[in-house]
Length: 128
Image (cartoon, rainbow, N blue to C red; front, side):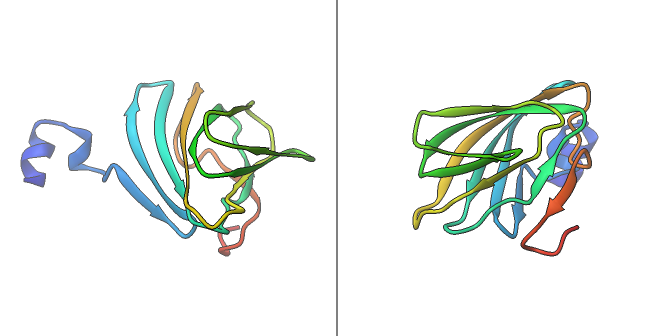
């Protein structure tokens, strides 16, 4: 089946849409050359690294759970149906301070949206 997907030049033949990380997982929903939409699921009491992106901005919309968001030196909490914008170049971290999974939609936009556009400053999983 994978060979057939690759013959048809479909992205699913080269890469899985669901990617697992130590903090949870994300699912690629749709993308273009300068944008991408993902569903993120953050495990209870877990967080992504404190990071920044040079070329892309992100917009997070909480679907369920409680999100703790660090933007530079500011921290805020978001509940279902609340959102936050993270401009390119902003240090940020997303955490799940609750006992239930945190689910949100992430919209990325910028001139480059590759997974390697990341500078990590702190990471609970040794990925510096």
